[in-house]
Length: 102
Image (spheres, one colour):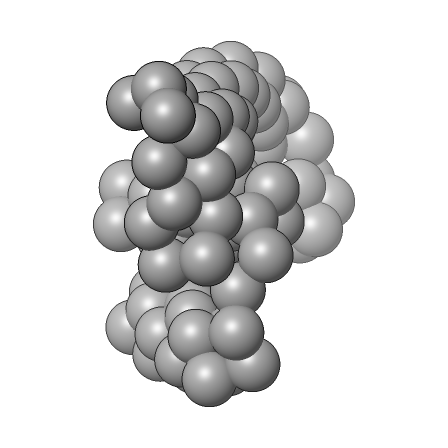
């Protein structure tokens, strides 16, 4: 049996590697997207008198990296088959990080 076919927590090592790759890619995309949107909404907020634009600008400014990492981890976990206990633990962890973000 090859190393790539090794089973870890009910998933093949190749599935774990794919999930980690998806999570890392998601983190990079979300982080870059946040940076781009943050700059654009900051410029719009300076030029506009609409309170919604200012609110979005502040929300993007205050979005923490740990929140982006949690969302990226959750996206990566979608590529794995997790037992119900692990799924609910992951869901609760993401909710706590969401509350920390707020």
